[in-house]
Image 1 (cartoon, helix red, strand yellow):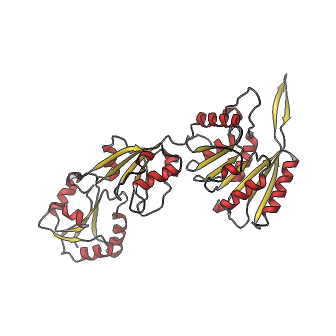
Image 2 (cartoon, rainbow, N blue to C red; image 1 turned 180 degrees about the vertical axis):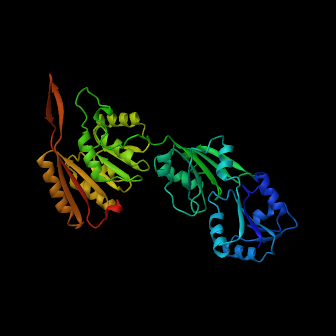
Image 3 (cartoon, rainbow, N blue to C red; image 1 turned 60 degrees about the vertical axis):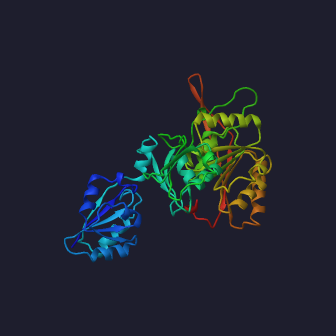
Length: 420
């Protein structure tokens, strides 16, 4: 039975081969791999077979003489997005007792990060090579990512996608033809590189400040964590107890698109951004004073995934991407049209509307009745939260009641909880 080696040959240039890999290749009786990889192998006596088909490779191995050494050449490192994973399973399935060893190589991740003088121990690795991946979500969540591109999504496509997700300022490095004489490394912002052509097999490193993390869940942050202007009329803010219940019912997921309509101080926007660390939050607000306060709080918490949308809802929401979750804290009397637009954009959207007055509650009930004419499975759940906070009076503690708040949750009844 032949001795089989699956060898990671690095970038393809012989200079990126490890000493052990080179020694095994030199001693091999048979070399198998893509034509480009065989060309780089320094062993003229070995029989060579150009193949990248796993079934064919297994048959070629089985045809080799007993005691021969067979080396299968694979790009990069055998443990990093390598064909070695499936090939190993295929060989073991056909020949469980085959003598086989995987030889590590230098991956494009290691090579490229060294070239641009950055570490890779803090990098999140993603691939869009023949697969789908929300690069913007991963970048917002982790702050520094390495991307393997492909013909289905080139480095230019990735840069354009980042620009469309308000990440045009991201710092981007693109590597092409790594280790070869024609090697090319480009650097700039995503916006600057969005019109540049790149090879279909380029790699990228992308950086932005990551979404802040906390040692405890961001659900019901203390009210005093938010900046509030005490001069003039105070900008409205959804209080801690209401936020905690409302967001728990909203069930925001990590990569979601969230609307906070009537954002005010931005307390709901901030907590939503913590929950949707890989997603986007659109804070819609018409009041210039509130917009200024909102922007201060976004900067105070250091968020990159909140976009302030100035204007009156629902008109200000027309051009926004479809929402997964919506919180309406202020509607300026437009509750029906706001909810209708959200349902038109995404019939599976989950929405929360809060109300203090009976008149607003009546408007919500009326709106849902009309919406059910088009979305007959629309479900309305209503809760009322009455909270009180202690206030000291000498040695006594008096419970001071806050306004009771109605929390109305709306979603399509035929949508399972897992879809949210």
